[in-house]
Amino acid sequence: MKKQIISAIALLLTSFVSVQANDLPQSNTIISAAQEKVAVKPEDLPEAIKTTLASDAYAGWQVVSAFLVTKADNTQVYEISLKKGEESSTVNLDKEGKKVE
Image 1 (cartoon, rainbow, N blue to C red):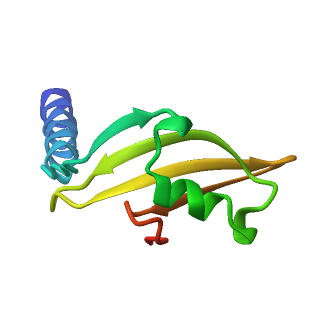
Image 2: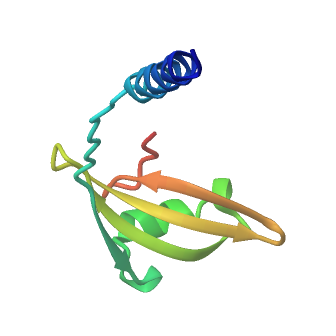
């Protein structure tokens, strides 16, 4: 009788463990973003972008860093980090100095 009870408990525990192991979802998601980001010195930015940054809209803002970002579709934008006092902002501009979202 003891052997039957022990066998029943062992069988119950084994089935419980195997059920728990099979309930784990499997996810094989690969996300790839093909983007190239190259640092650009603020003084090496195109003249159109310098003109935009010198306009009234960006008065008082200082360029902290700038990057030329080439996206997967081969479009290029300049990602420019700006700082004004304690405030900071990032703006994306195309080579003509127009804002890009």
